[in-house]
Image 1 (spheres, rainbow, N blue to C red):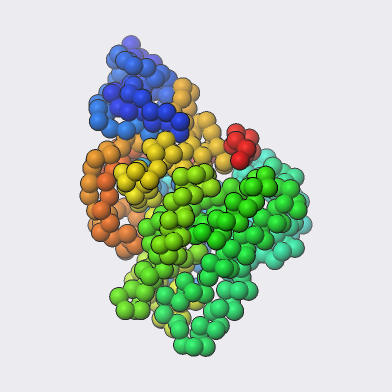
Image 2 (image 1 turned 90 degrees about the vertical axis):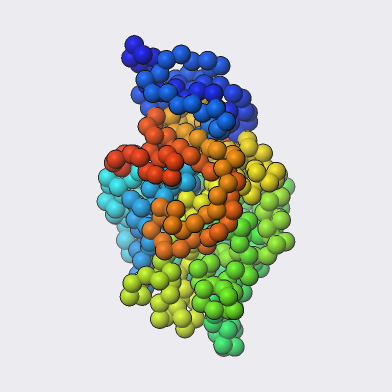
Length: 477
Ligand code: DUC
Ligand code: ZN
Ligand code: ZN
């Protein structure tokens, strides 16, 4: 701290945490929050936040960047464009995946993604691993060492030919997770049911993008959710069911919790803002591919259920599942490629959303009175920090925490427009949505990195975050 006092004072804003809101000044020195008080004098830099909300920076705990596809398509964001888009959307931490290819060591996968991220991150980042090849060596040697070093969560898939784990493998992975105190995230969709539906639909000539939503039926998600929960119960390990799309898988999560099982749940913007009808495009045309993601968006009944779950605590976290593809793309690199035109099953699964996650939940949730401001903060920052072992360094506005702060204008009304976004994709599935409440300034470790629609930091200064054991600060359900 210099003679002028703190490095930064944010003055007169409404500070919002997962439990409280109050008007106060907030001081920062050396990148940490040092004081919160009614009035703080001085400050080398001073920000007048009158009329704004002062929120802990958003933590997007489910983001795909620069993931290798292996089918000629490419992800539209690398670590640079993806994290620029993140900070423009009010986030200070993103959690992308380090994907293990079959036959590859987990350690190598982590090193590969570090090489892709090195020097390119505009927000802080921390990886989840994806385990596709759970050999005894991976589960018995590599995973324990990586967990000890701070790679403490990983995802497994119950579908996709190149990633699916069978039940025996899931049980082994869950058991390793229990031994090591790591946290497993589960992509719960039943592989055989999806393959069966896909074949039937194709036999009938129903190959347009819309039929992706029928092939990836909610019943298949419900069944896999229950199966994952049963395996976790058998092994006695907590799990996170990610990207829950609708009422039926939610009911399984509620079923588990009534029995005292530690099952955490995540949902995403596409399940409140889109429905399967969006996959129809204009007239069952290929425009629908813009909305193809897995699990797919459902119907208005499921949207209502998801809102209820966001309110009542069924959902712990709200993440984007940002998985960006070009629509057009050059030479078959986008969703619109020759093979994808022959069947929905070849359309890359995923949509961009790291920049629009917070505005969509704020506008549809807080501005429309569906959830409180405090719940918004819990779902988008505090709970992801707790669940994945970053709290209270992240996700909290308390003395000693990193000064990762988003200033939010709850009144600003403007539509989502592709031309204003910073992601690499050539479209947004939320084009034209009117949003009330936007981030206007993102502060990472005390430095303003985004302000008034522009990235203002000259260089990528995000850090890699090693993490503690998950769950140690997450309250029991
Ligand atoms: N699962 C994800 O988590 N993201 C995109 C595609 C998928 O299947
Ligand atoms: Zn998934
Ligand atoms: Zn995902």
